[in-house]
Length: 300
Image 1 (cartoon, rainbow, N blue to C red):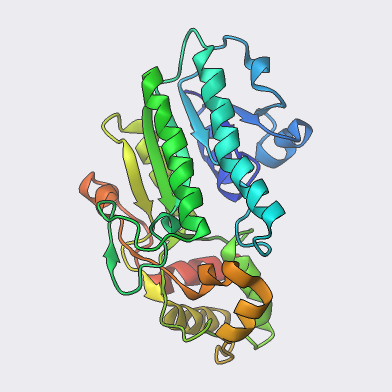
Image 2 (cartoon, rainbow, N blue to C red):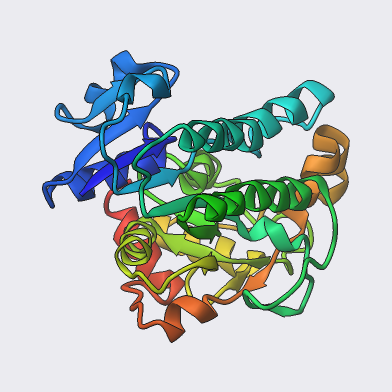
């Protein structure tokens, strides 16, 4: 299979490349730093700086995961513009390029996040649910999905992967928590009652592969384990896996003062369930958080 990836040098993209190379796929990564692609993704992965470099070479699929990290710094006007351009503007560029193609791929798998729903409080969220609140993260995800869905006009099957918090030993959410927990100052965020939809990196890679290969898969899919947990329970279990205490809460007022609107991303959450993945027969390898954390703690 011949696949074009955006965001291929990120956490999920690198793992996907490793996974698909073992299956003999031909992979091309569109990147701002194409010279780094082979080192990060695999020596046989091709890096390109411009889509035009592909010419009319045939493709079977596009996996669109590009996007600046949303929680790295406060959402200033400049930061919002960058987050928007790295998702929506880039996807629009993909669509404009697709329009010029004589032969088009059959499927576009495009990134999104459970933040599409906004802070859902205590509600259980499935793919049938509508957005509960309209914060910047929710608006960003909605615009990203709406843009990707326009590829249907070119005959592509479009899948939007609404990813939860990806747990991995190299990069991502978990590694940011590792230092404070190992120093013994980890703990819940705010009151700790907010729901955390999580997914082990191995399941994230497997489910994207599953959606790629199932021709009847289209539309949005919640990419998270079927057992979301509250933040307080997550902190307790992470402390246990790292053999460290987890009793130092991070006050909500401090977060709001330092991060502004971005703090809502940490103080809110989604009780999201992967209803459509389960209905279509996908099997999660890691369905409970203690098992997932124990597996990853051995790699940390």
